[in-house]
Picture 1 (cartoon, helix red, strand yellow):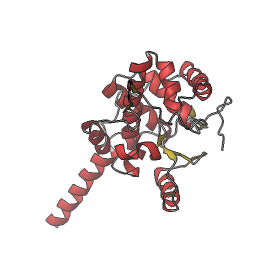
Picture 2 (cartoon, rainbow, N blue to C red; picture 1 turned 60 degrees about the vertical axis):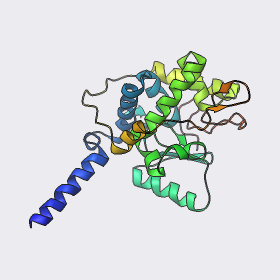
Picture 3 (tube, one colour; picture 1 turned 45 degrees about the vertical axis):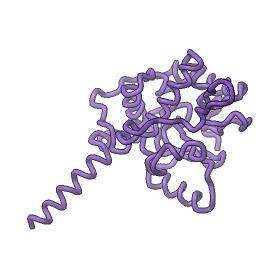
Length: 239
């Protein structure tokens, strides 16, 4: 009995560390905002910037109103919202097995093809806080280059001006419409997010050329179509 008790205690501790002690008490529609808050605290990127971007990337209407959704996948240009993490993961792994590599996941729609080497696994890419921290630090680099958060938001999506400008228009709209105050008891970072903070954050497209170093976007400059995003001017899903 003592051994069984110790086993249960260890399992309970493990689940608390991995899941984070606050996420069980909030709805999925709040998860991305909580992750944005943690990323804001860790990176210094303005919270409003992060909240607006996660809405531009994954926003949808639900019973709680319009908000971001953590279990969002854009698979080779087709965006899908899933009701839970397991369904989103199953979808990604099914397509991964057939050879798909160009897909975006999570609150900030991090692209696997260009950024997977900065994560230990696809599961870690799905982790809301790890996803948000990576996006925040990338945005901070873009802001250092461009000197403006709105311009950084556009470059986050694409380096092609017409796609960046469309994205910025939606971003500005969502930023202006932000409402609500986040609860004070923001959950502690998950284990995956802590590992992300400890690891050196190197962006694969922050590359030094023959002359000056240049910042890449989440979409390479050569991808002139821009990264397909879950957005259009009516804020409805463009599936």
